[in-house]
Image 1 (spheres, rainbow, N blue to C red):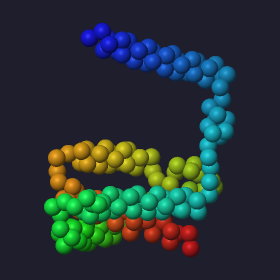
Image 2: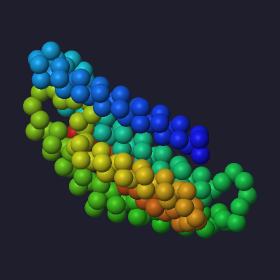
Image 3: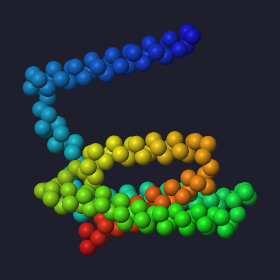
Image 4: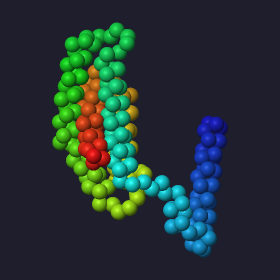
Length: 182
């Protein structure tokens, strides 16, 4: 009980210090000591549209490959398990077919929206602007859902279909970004 109380006290102190720091920042900003526009421009890593297209395509491709590899390791582990080779290929094939459907009818539409948004931006944009800020919330949700599913009691062989489907879908849709570079 005593250790728990000390941990709570430390957390309260950290929160209080962060709050005080925030208040000092607001006061300095309000008094004109800090010029927010100059501060933001100084730390803004701005790049042109082609870099944004490349980063988006690279990110989607790498995440797609990572998900497919994770599913592949579940289907074909190095240690001999109850999953036969034929069953593994059946689940992998199902995931790939699902992935093409997700990629063409789902993720491609998201990629088209991102490409349209990037295309109509004028001048250099922030390097993190290859997707809309709302999409970062979706990404955080998807990561949380993935972690939850991975640690759930669901058999990995069934999760491999979902992971393969989303991974292949991301990989297929990533080529829309690379096409914009041509």
